[in-house]
Image 1 (cartoon, rainbow, N blue to C red):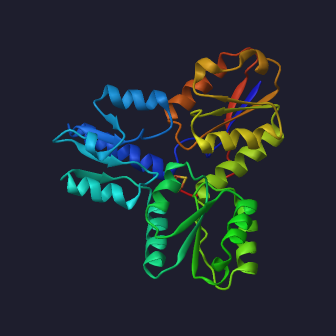
Image 2 (image 1 turned 30 degrees about the vertical axis):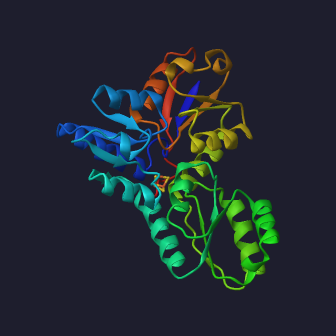
Image 3 (image 1 turned 30 degrees about the horizontal axis):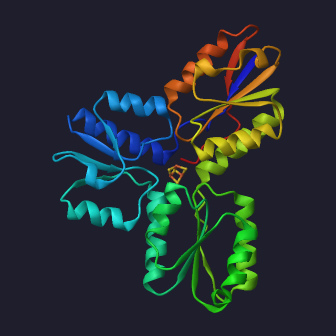
Length: 297
Ligand code: F3S
């Protein structure tokens, strides 16, 4: 069996930055509270907890003397206000690409624009963006955008600013853009999909189209990992695992070539563990790193 590791597998720039910020605070002996799990990886969150980091759900839970870390997804403006009112020290690890979206919608909202956000309304990043807007609508696809427009016909002639969740599907975003340009009088549209995601997805799809099976390493609660899995599954049998112990050994036993990729919040050590476990599988002869694609980071 040949194993090919996607070059773009693992932490993206924003997640790596957030993790390094927390690790530095822990190295300095600070007591750290992260607002929600730092990444969607239970093993990694536990390893941070073992070093003294605590996950809290609101600034009010942060004990005196601790640092509150905002994770890469970002948070609504109200969280900063609440933390300031409590006198908390805040370390902001919001990904700079997400922080830019906050600035864009904030500035447009101040000028009276209605925000149109393409994304999952339940996702923390979208909740964060929504919390930097005045009036806003969230839609998950073109159909939802059409419905919103039909129910709120005033939007057609109102100043609107449109942004997308950084991990939004590129083709769906293009359809939504075209609709807004056609139907709305003067929409301001910002392309805010992060290239780290599209590069990872493109590479995963290419690998899946060439491999007999794919292994996707990542947290089950991670939306970007779930999307990677769905993309790969359209091409070949694909398995989402959180770690080496979940490797589907029987299913892979007869595969000639297995591709491996990982979500944006999968630590390098877990990917390495999976690769090491794969070398223990019968018939594995070599592991290649896919050099055909480069990461934008
Ligand atoms: Fe930032 Fe892009 Fe990662 S927006 S958190 S670098 S996927």
